[in-house]
Amino acid sequence: MMKKQGNTYCFDDPPRVLSYASVVGKKEGEGPLSRDFDYISNDNTFGEQTWEKAESRMMSMAFERVLNKGQLPPEQLGCVLGGDLLNQCISTTFALRPTNVPFFGLYGACSTMAEGLVLAACLVDGGFERTVCAITSSHFCAAERQYRYPLEYGGQRPQTAQWTATASGAVVLHKGGKGVKITKATPGRIADPGVTAQTNMGAAMALSAYETLQTYFQDTKTGPTDYDPIVTGDLGKVGHQIVLDLFQRDGVDMRPTYDDCGLLLYDGTQDVHSGGSGCGCSAAVLCSYLLKALEQKIFRKVLFCGTGALLSPTSSNQGQSIPGICHLVCLEADV
Image 1 (cartoon, helix red, strand yellow):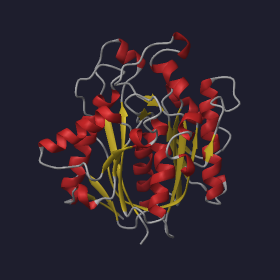
Image 2 (tube, one colour):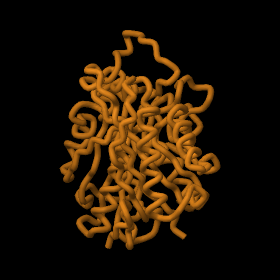
Image 3 (cartoon, one colour):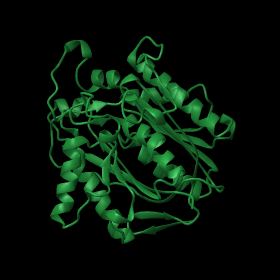
């Protein structure tokens, strides 16, 4: 059964990854991780008439693939934990409405994949379910329309801005067997550094990442060198540097092992300004590069730290600051 060490959950019988899948758009497929994705679409509409329907279709494809790879019929899936960035999480609910699988809707902004994994691991380890799917997505065009401006407006983006990934990722956890395991998890606390600019999300989320990592290190009596990579969700260049600076202030050098999904998903030739963002950014990197490296034992231990900016168009238009959140899971190779 799960034990709690400080603020960190420790799983005695760690839930295992049964299967994982990633579906991405054209730009993501042109990046450095292209060989690791399950499906790359050259059409960002995914054959649909609106960007919102396209995102829902993309998530449906990820869900179908993760079940197929795990040879798991939908009726044998205990429940799905999922969410996205759109109002009322419509991408997720519309993607899953034909499935007849029990569903919990989550909103953790871009931390949703990590949040889903924390809760899925608790459900499996606690004996409530044998199999649970965590799933999320984001779509550049749908997110721009909701949070900033429609693409037709042609608004200029400062260098602190990030590129919302057109991507979906899904993971199925189960009890027993072999495979990559989740051994620990630390739920995040809301942290607000006072950033108000919607085009500076990395700065808004960096403090929450620092605080969650700091909590985890204290609870587990470990440090950065105990992990192959430590990967935040989507802080980009700006937020990544802030985390490095905050730990440097404490006398901790994170540089040898610390990276960010927003920096891994795209390369230097792609114009994404500060880096990638969105729920699908961390989900796609996890459900391709990171889990594959753990399966192949290239990595032994990975700290996956999903970061989210808890804003809405209304709160931003009213001048409110942007709170951040960061949930952490420790993934270990099966040795």
